[in-house]
Length: 519
Image (tube, rainbow, N blue to C red):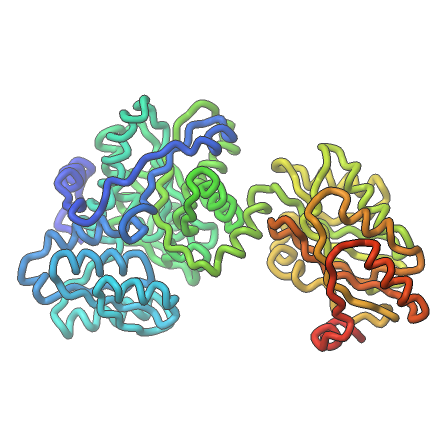
């Protein structure tokens, strides 16, 4: 990459003279007060999600382009990117009056394509992956005499990202304390952590630099362990901002020499961290932007630290809106504020009520039912998929033991990926046992006792054959219930619905019900 390997002192000079503030802002360093209280350590958030393109990538892209010759800028630049780097290059080119060609995979969300076009970038869609887009960009670079702006493996790009660390150390003094024990940095290709580590180790070498990767996209961690760059066969795409199969040659050299520790986090932990950031800032960061926060929580739990100060770089906020539903659902499990179970109860009258009463009597105080899925399938036993609120880690095992002591066979599903991802949505189906079934959609008030009121008003000879409920955080819960009601008792059943007073819609004749749930 370079004639000679640059040392931290060399990078320090490049960082101090980097040109980033023509387009970037000095982002805030803010205390995360709620998270700090919970962790008993001071957590500081470096708000790179507040940059004009909602990502730190602008810094490195502009610094690289600001060092090009007038002739290179006149011919134009090119990059391959499906996200934040593309927007950084496009905005930098607009500022510098240069042409910018951005090669993006055909699978890139339209939101990101439109964002690049709005900044003046010429978008070329090619291939199904970043690798395809990269190969095509190299071809166009040669054909059109353009200058390639690498997303991470370039000393000028690395120096631009390093200005973040320069700001953090300067801003610490404004927060009343110069103490910083560690800075946590998300790693994709390694440009950000290379810049941060070079500056920190040149100026405050006692501060730990801790790299964070997704457990399914840990190319840097594997490379450092193998002492050579490792190409991953595949990467997870939840944190698309860090989904890199092969880290840079220069970033690998820097990281293996300067990064103190590496941590991997999983999807649920990242979802919980996105929620943590939202609680403290009322801002929603993308998965890559929450990696550092997830790692701080994991680090504190592992090392049992107290009274230390950690900085997390919130490196981006280009979140697809459609992902929020998934994030919200998995955040509670990631924080272990929800536990999931498969509970087996006798298929007999009153067993549902007995189970609900058991939930109300569990140790640790009242627990809300977050999910309840059931479909009659066996004449002797009923398998119920149930979610319960918890107050912290490790409670699911205790709750499962309590259910077993009360005579309910229980399987803890809190850490079961198949259950969390798929089975919770698939409980149900046709049943030959669901005779005389009426199907109703209810709206229950989200308050204690609503379900028990429903169960207590049911006549003993009306059997629940289907139940589906998932808490969505609203004032009212939407519940689907199947009840076996003999034809001769339909009038009494209608009177029961009127007495209950909960809004409901009968779906017994809905063709969807008949196709998928009724035999």
